[in-house]
Length: 433
Image (cartoon, rainbow, N blue to C red; front, side):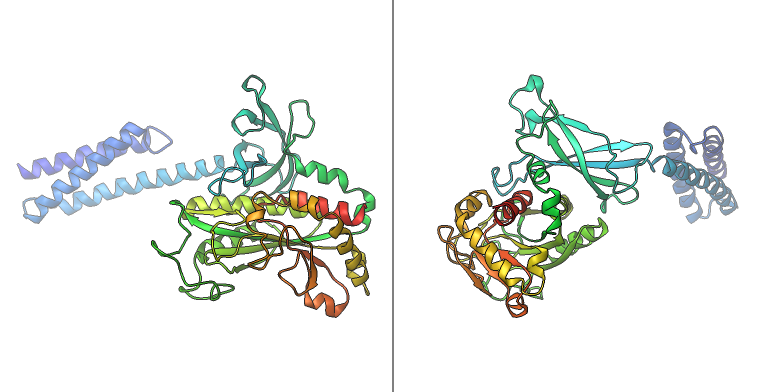
């Protein structure tokens, strides 16, 4: 009786797998696949119990027969997966745009929006031939009326997508109004219109030091004790070790992603406040700098989803005796970098001193909480320049002073500043006025 039951189990399993392997090119239909697997599991489990009781003679031979049919099914499945992989070579393009609300929605939310488009015929990475697209501006605060809410996405920069990999791309876009004119949040176009051939001839270079602070989903600073505070500031800046550094795996993942995307990232370091970090972009031209900064910001937020981390650009994420977060911007022209260029640097600083209020007004929301004259900042109400002075509005690095040429560092921008705005205002003030 037991032998008959075992034989029937094997026969049932065999017939199911033969039917699954031969009747469809996808190894088996979903229903047959489920039936075959359940049947095999039940038959082998029951037969094994009989073998353990030594009640089935020659069952191992029958079991091997099942194994041979399983092998043929698995081969069929591998072939099906191989064919499916060919289909997946269609290109995924992540369209990225800005809603113009950085710093206006609290530290938990940023201004970056994205959605994905799939192209069966892939375009080269780096191409600007990706088609325009649209989105619902009434859902991003970029239109006031739901009955005419479409805004246009115009691709302006593309690079490899280091997260999806393959031929997937990130496509940074400008936002246009329905009539094709630049949207009010489109600060990139204002910069592009400013960068004439005359400006290009002066070869303006920029570097951007993007500080940011890590928080958990619960709004608690990442790595800080559940109650109370870590040690006072001092051991954390450029620190090493579990007691001094919070979040390095996340930072390294972001660093790698920026490199794989081909961005001009030039370094990273832990900052003064524990759980606060910085990455640097540049040197680069004005438009290139803004594009690379915005894609690097996108990657920071996107990887935060995987790590369970919120990266905020809030200028003062923690009140009290803690450093704020800035975006120090380095600026030079060909004349500044030439021998004796310090003369041109001093001229630029003099021009910047006369438009201090205009720059402060455009250098990030909530910056008044950071620019207090403490924690390595100058007061927002005063303008001061100095060599190696981190409490100055404009700092001249010591190596620049010694070489008598190089660049200046504008230390006023907040971490949430629009990089297109910073570069535009530096060009306007120093090169056009």
